[in-house]
Length: 89
Image (cartoon, rainbow, N blue to C red; front, side, top):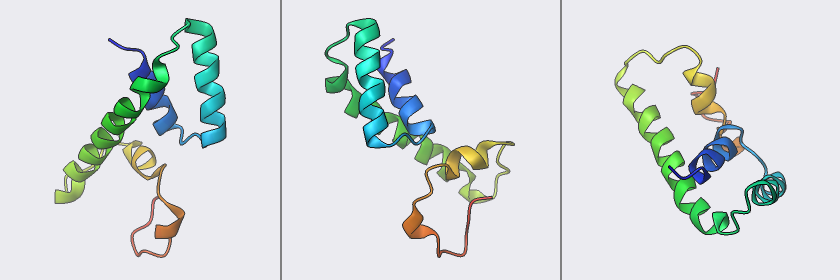
């Protein structure tokens, strides 16, 4: 398994800012010597985001969401959606 998917997952789950993301990626490259990680990272970021959207859409039918999952789903709630009637809890 490619550890770049773990890196992409951490960046997504922790909602890391782009400047901090660059610092983390550089630290990863320095620790592992994996100079090609940036080339694979976009694909893994898309995969992680798609999986999160699929997880979120699963609960749209009224299925009860496991404890703590709300925080994960809404951790990336865009500020421009803050006026919508549905808000993260």
